[in-house]
Length: 141
Ligand SMILES: [Zn+2]
Ligand SMILES: [Zn+2]
Image (tube, rainbow, N blue to C red; front, side):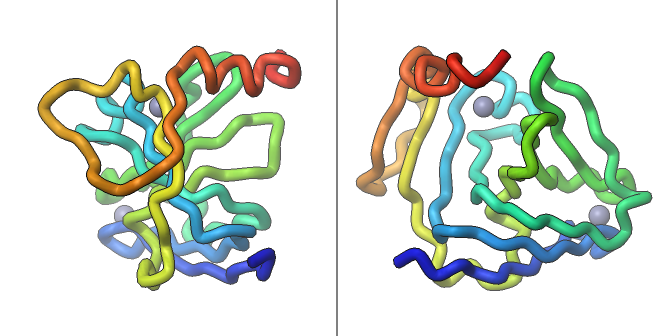
């Protein structure tokens, strides 16, 4: 199960394409208020390393918190990633991948921030915002 996956993907208009490596084909859903405003719904992403963008000049980055930035295509507006600035990991939007056949929904975070009007039926691990922050707070300075 620890076979690295070589992934490719692109934004809606194709001005940004990328290659990335993922350890697991696991999709994380974030229900937090910021992600839902940014994505007009829950943000679904795959944790990736060794991310290389083609069309980097079309990648707009906004600093969304002290520790993280979010990227989107400046041509078509597709959301691309959430990125903790001081790490090499990118949470890449799941909808961008060319092949999504082996992706699995594995974790939902900020479940306490999820509005009532939707619910995923997938069996996943669940974490509240507090549980998630507790997991990362020793490292996140
Ligand atoms: Zn685009
Ligand atoms: Zn979020």
